[in-house]
Length: 201
Image 1 (cartoon, rainbow, N blue to C red):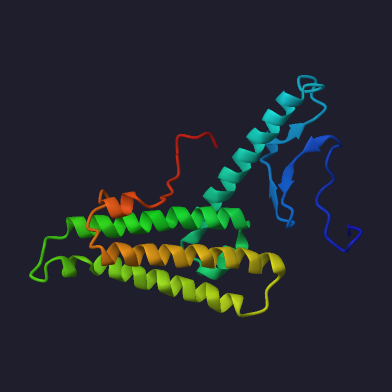
Image 2: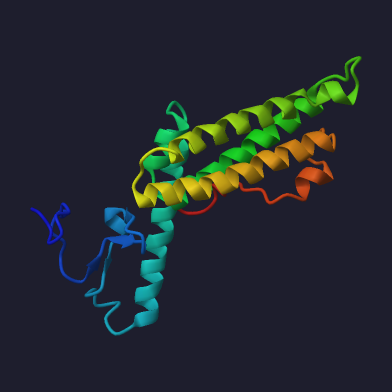
């Protein structure tokens, strides 16, 4: 049916059961069915600290799964389409994870390349190519923002642009400072994001 303000209602939910989290901006991230928290469960009744721990566990699992889905969906879809198809925090986290992996690959390719007659300037080609790709990625999102978008989408893309500019600038700095290996100080000094696969889903 229709909600009071014309929004589509989801399936009816049992009273006292927490099945999703909703941001102040209106984004909803649903919990996996087995992670829904029943406030009426005898173990939790009257024990706020246990109840909150269950809610936090469900929230962590939902965010982790949402980020993993965003990472999986990134392959094969246009970046702008991808960014608008997932919750903002998942897009920003997945983008940071993907950027770290791209820089690591470029640095590793540089480290693996045999020094050519061009010396270190020839080694910078991987970072130079990455910087150009990051600039193109940024341009795609900027073009989207110039169009008509809902407020939440515009906010998501605005945050993505800020991160994209920083990421492009870091890649350019690594190239300028002749970083040639993932172990180089210039890269190690940067905030890097990696997915910890050992964490529970």
